[in-house]
Image 1 (spheres, rainbow, N blue to C red):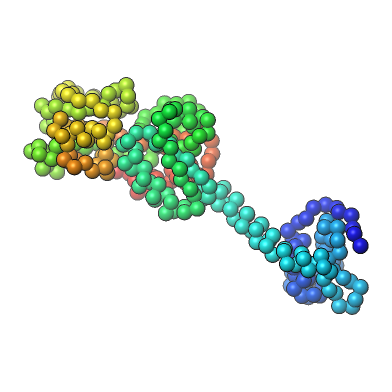
Image 2: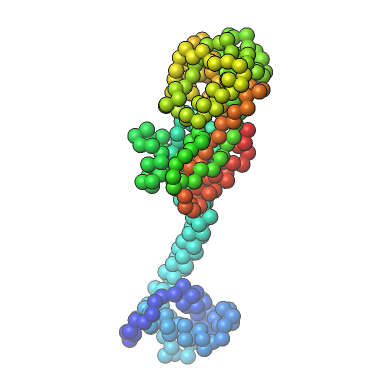
Length: 302
């Protein structure tokens, strides 16, 4: 007999039905579920109406499953397992522990520490896939606006509207010297000790103007204006020119993560400039961004 469909299929109906299919007895199934028998019978009737078929043959003293009932008993566990898996995945996504995180990387200096941050993040959240985007074709602010990336890792400060910028690393400066230079054997240096040396530097208009200005203010406080002989826009190129003996440089400490044969990194004891690495994202809640920022901050402060 075919029954008219009403309402919709509910997972609890499947739980109830599988209890009956396992016990083949309404009373025992009701006790197993911890409910009274009449409501259980009503729920099974409701399930049969939803599916439009009879699941249980009630014509005999001992109940049996119909062909439709046997088919449902075979397939229902997979449905319940899939539903449980879906629930777990949705909860993980809400907690920022599942999904795809697209990270835009700004400068080569950021590339030196971002892999370490990503490794830590993946160790904590292995179910999250990470995609790096170092495309130079559009500014990161525009890529964030277009939702081509979820987060950008940039040198601070960042002054952009409609974004959230959070500090994930705060680091001091180091001197970059040719390994043959006498000062390269020192453990620390004062900024003034570099005053008479030629500098390899980065151009203000192709880097962070704020960092450039802060650094030159530090040079002035140390009593000199650097004599710049070479310019380069990327830190690996700066270190390469220093290694060839073109001059010395001052760089964020994380540049030392990318060792360069022929170049030595020495801590500056008196340079009061701190370089901030920022996680920049849209000004909205994104659980993946939140968990990445938390992981990046942990153990990453210089």
